[in-house]
Length: 475
Image 1 (cartoon, helix red, strand yellow):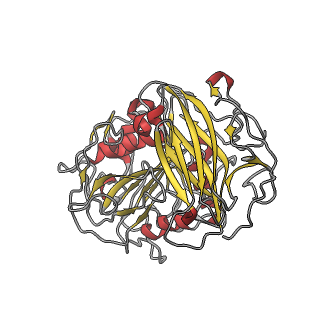
Image 2: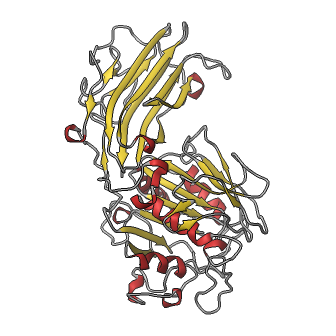
Image 3: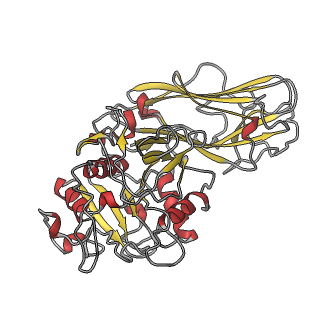
């Protein structure tokens, strides 16, 4: 989008002097999001409102809904609950650390229903076979953005079990690309339209990864029995990571199991429903026991991923936060800049309520560069991230430019956390609105780190980097 040249006579609202060190006792917490993580019991909701039992599918933890405990309040074997996902459900129930429910109606967030997403830490979508409504997609995406975990399990293309014209590949891709919260590849991957008949995809080597090496065991391989993969796009979300790959594939293609983040929440993708199928279910269904397949470690993968999504500290969730306990919180002071010239250290005029560039919410935002001449602006805040926490930095970015090139990055915005460069954006990232960016910064737990935005503009043609609604969420 072409923008008008920025006036040099902006209001001067920047802080002078050294960066402020913010401690947990002095934080200005202004988030209004519903907390998604419980302190001890991890609350998991399995969806059964989108034809998850159509055809031979039986993707339920129990025939008793919403509460599986009504079928058996103390299950000791997977047959104590009825469903092809009962092994998964019973394994979690037996730990004593999980509360499980099944949703059979429309998914909501912020409502009064007992299965409203605000009451849960993790949502499992086990091969949905009907499209989510517009309202449901908003609920799901907002739930994740505010700290929830989302487990998306697909199947091969053409697996339209209820013959309504949509399979899980199309339905989950629609969720990610056609929602009111963020449709700009928010998770950093898309699901491939493939039908891979068989295989044992192998896990990458990463001893520190909580999903591959968690409390429920070590993951070495998974199983494909007519499934698909995902294509990763780290340029859209730097936190996307392939953990298990189809034979002969690596990097950004052929990812059979992948994780990512969105806002302060977490996301996992699995390319087939066969690995979670325990071979038992309701009468009349033809099922396959992938859960206990001796050539794979599907149970450990499903259970470790559930724990990671739910923010279980014992698994080291978030890829580096470590163990221990953590109080969920938003740590940045003045995160939406509405308090004006406080908490942040910024170049002159960066924090502003100028009407020349609109804020995403409220009146104030941080506007770096936009002069159309050689210029550098900075914005920073130092924050202490408690030990034992998983941490996610997020912010909304709008890039407005008068540059016409489609190949050369003349003007750049660099985002750093401590000594780590998280991302670099440029005039090539110009867009008409704000785009959510998020990064896992759990490796900084136990330190005081400076979150810094540095904008450098060339000698001609303006580029404005406008930031709003920042957050550093820990759990």
